Image (cartoon, rainbow, N blue to C red):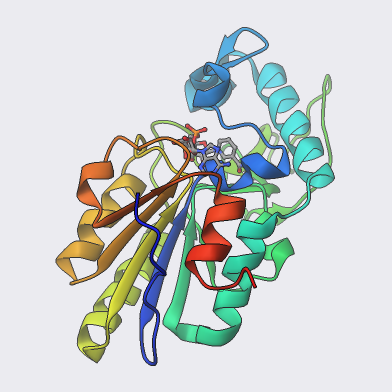
Length: 247
Ligand SMILES: NC(=O)c1ccc[n+]([C@@H]2O[C@H](COP(=O)([O-])OP(=O)(O)OC[C@H]3O[C@@H](n4cnc5c(N)ncnc54)[C@H](O)[C@@H]3O)[C@@H](O)[C@H]2O)c1
Ligand SMILES: [Zn+2]
C-alpha cells in the first residue's frame, strides 16, 4: 500500500493506461471478473474473427448489448479525475485506453488513444471502406451489410488481431518526446489486469524511458511487480485522492 500523491509538477509528462476496471464503478462488467463467459459462451467466441465467421448474429447481439450498457452508463469519479488532470497538463498528458465504451470522452478527456477500438464505430469485415460512427443495435437477421455485400462488424480489435499502428505509434511518440524533453515522466495504469499485450507491456516501455510507475487496481495485477507504487482499491475513490483532486 502506498498512500502518497502521484508527483506531478511543473513540466511532468504523464502517460495513463486504463482498462475495464476503471469503468466497473460505472456498472460495466469486466470480462475476467464475470468468469469470462457471456450467456454461456467464452468471450473469445464473441470477440474474435473466427467467432464472427462462425456466428455473426451471436457476435452482433453481444456488441448490441454492450452498446446499450455503455450508452446507459455514466462516467465515474476516476474518468472525471483524468479529464481534470488533462485540463491542467494539456499535451503533457496522453491517455491510452483498452476500453471501448467511450466513457473517457464523455467525461471530457480529449487526448485519448483507444488501442482496442470503440463500440461507437462500425466497419466492413472485408473491404477498406473507412469505419463510420454507429450506435445502432443490430440483433439480426438480417444483419447489416456493407455496400460491397460483406457483413459489417464492430470497429473493435478482437483477439488475434493487430492493433492499429497509428494508435501504438502515438504512444511511442509520446514516450520519445518525453525522453527528449528531459522532464520527469510518470506512468499510471488504472483497472487493468496485465493480461493483454501489448498494452500490458507499456509499463516496461515507460520504465525504459525513465518513468516512475504507478498501478491503481482492485486486485494486484499480474504484472504488479513491474510497478514502483501499487495502490489497491476502487479507482473512483483511489485515483482522485492520488491526484489530489478529492478536496
Ligand atoms: N468498459 C469496457 O470498455 C470494457 C469492458 C470489458 C472488457 N473490456 C476490454 O476487454 C479486454 C479484457 O478485459 P478484462 O475485463 O479482462 O479487463 P482487464 O484485463 O483490463 O482487467 C480488469 C482489472 O480491473 C480491476 N478492477 C475491477 N474493478 C475495479 C475498480 N473498481 N477499480 C480498479 N480496478 C478494478 C480488476 O482487478 C482487473 O485486474 C480489455 O481490452 C478490456 O479493456 C472493455
Ligand atoms: Zn465493404
